[in-house]
Length: 114
Image (cartoon, rainbow, N blue to C red; front, side):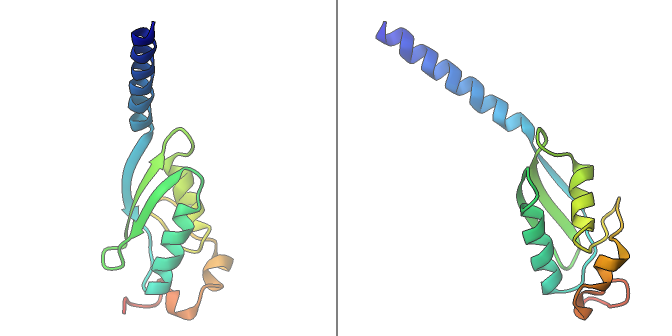
């Protein structure tokens, strides 16, 4: 009886660990920004999105690399929420009122990277 219990415990543990790998997706897409303040806002804002597990925005390339739980959120919703922070993405534009409220150094539509 003890061996049967151990077998079931191992079997179900393995099954659940396999499922968790299928829902985590990696993606990279462009998010416009020009400075370290942009990086901080994009990185912190991205990981605060429910379902995003990891985010790293690269200033030089403007690429945001993320790992997210596809059972909780999709890539389009992630890009919408990042645009709501004031940064255009490949699919969504930031609202002008939010963009205009960013610090002046973050105006990527008029500034060149520092």
